Image (tube, rainbow, N blue to C red; front, side, top):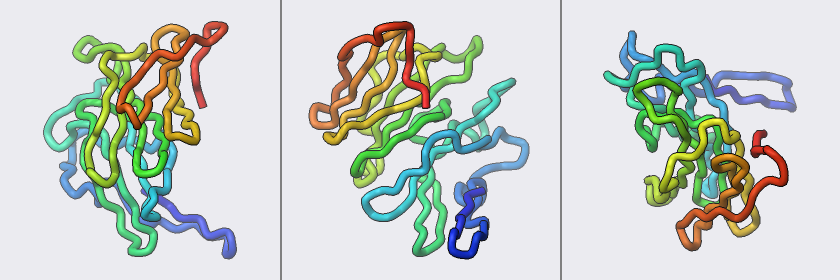
Length: 187
């Protein structure tokens, strides 16, 4: 569920439910464990967030569950809707927004049937689609945070001690350096 806190009245109320917002989930199928990344406000005043499967023990994709959901909440209309699964068969534990772009790091659950790694991605809110994905899987344990500068360039951990940057103007990723010690961006 999504909750709204009103500081003036010190009250908390449920304003939306992911399963109801999605509308296609079937009982018995895997679900949407939690929201692990940020809830970000888009330029239109809507709030965006991504679900994350949470514990991945015996995770199964199929049926109504093909991956985790990108959700949009309109505070004025008090309406929560699903924008679908932008990164199939992944969960997204970290997100960040800049202008009309939502950045995320999607990962596959560790296990025999999935590749070990995560994927940085960029979603264009106006075009309603993913406009960039990392060309290669990034080390699964490489951190869970994205920093964004004033030009909208996203910084995130790569393999080992690599620091990567996504530039929306070039729609490209590059290695810009390394941490001076074994380190990663994490919260």
